[in-house]
Length: 126
Image 1 (cartoon, rainbow, N blue to C red):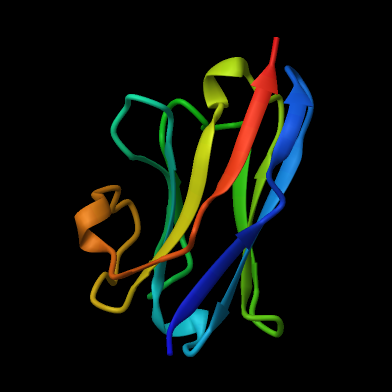
Image 2 (image 1 turned 30 degrees about the vertical axis):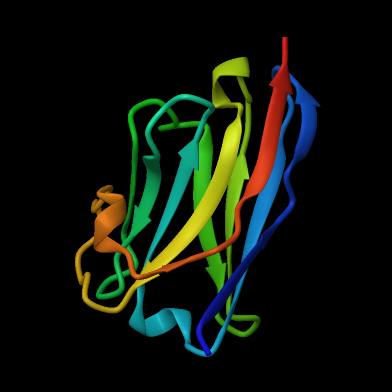
């Protein structure tokens, strides 16, 4: 059974950092494109990072570029989202997602991803 489990969310002040983790079971990240998404109350789910399965390249939304960094530990079958210089507008539930069909990075359409974690809440106070 394919499963993604996120962790690492919490409440921080503006300017602080958090690292989210997404542990996979039932498949290996090597063969899947990975996306990080977030959804704030009353807003649509938006992509913040998209990692290619073919060459490992990562693309970021303009709103997080230079502040967020996605990485992976293949030995642990876990991907991470390091979030620095957090802003109140980063407050949302964050999700990781995986797709076997996507080969290239830069895919921010949620419907393109097949597997989703349960989400983890990130709250940034001003």
